[in-house]
Image 1 (tube, one colour):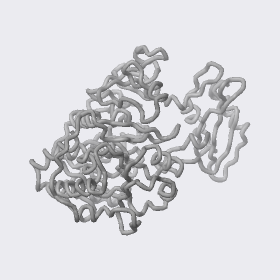
Image 2 (cartoon, helix red, strand yellow; image 1 turned 90 degrees about the horizontal axis):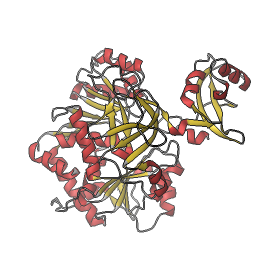
Image 3 (cartoon, rainbow, N blue to C red; image 1 turned 180 degrees about the horizontal axis):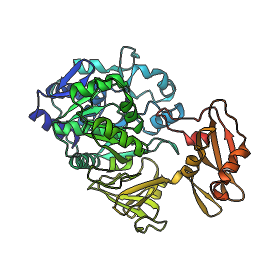
Image 4 (cartoon, one colour; image 1 turned 90 degrees about the vertical axis):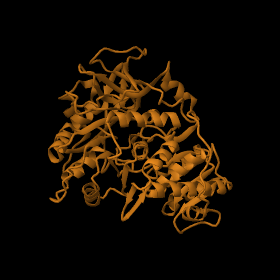
Length: 496
């Protein structure tokens, strides 16, 4: 269980540094005392076992304190993506049926509408000095509460986490994960990459992401050190990588590109060992650039929230890894299925299906989606891919990005890749629009390079000269910028 692993680590390494944050260092003995105090403070404030508690904090040690303290009292942590736009943020907060919310006072503006409409009985715990009169102050709960240990124990099947999906193609959806789900995924990751207490974990991405939470849990279970940063500040991160010998990172390809491009000659990155790329496709050129810059492998991975985190990854011993996310971690079965749910042979494209004890039992308050995705013990990811001759999985496209037109399946990324080869086009996104004739038609959303001009018909003619006519856009729209999520991805749901 999550808290039991912390207690085991405290017994083994009470004096070892657990968290490095700015100029502060907290050892495991001190971390345990803070978590015990906060656990008692939460109980005194009215938070109990089984309550859902939103955690809306930036990357500060108090996120880690609160996460473990809530687990210790048996509450269910609901990490909140504070980068969501207002509608999605309020949907998550209202859909979670919260007993309490723990938030940073810097997020008051984002929470204004929720607080105006939420139940008066919701417990508010604030990090910071701007504290409403009906709330508790997080720092005071830590300083003023009893240090006594909590005797409660969690069962394997108890829900530990209600993690919401990103909401890229649809509204965010809640994924309940048990203590067993999370522990199984974490153990598989540690075993796969042979991590030890000597590793140092870089926690640079937002802790509301499940992969970032897993970084924390893996480090704590091993007794390793966590180097925590509140924002993506490459000069500061590069300095801390060398100073504290960071060896394990999970981040996006864009982050690794920034690290490669950091030109400070004093930055060596020689400690980097387990570098996991997640969140989006890893370009082969970047993997090569990273290996040359740091003499270390950049691993590609495949993350599924519904399975508790990373489910597949490349490894240094693998060959022919171009466009591959590697193979499933040992606790997962991973097949490519056709529309009838039958396994496909190598090199045939189908939907990626996963089976594991780390998989959720079903979505939160969404039986329709549960029945659509969970069938005969398999979870259907909505991603299309194939298994190559070496057994590695290659992602092709998300199911949501496939357009069905007159019986043809059109992969939008193929058209997007073509469009961006045009010398006048800076960026392109392709989506479906309803069609009375074909069910769906192809719409190309175009951003032109500075001082360039094109007509919609010229874009269509360009496509017709390279791909079959049925794949070509029927409609072209021009934008100054494409809408993006606050994580930087093109927001296709907003385009639609």
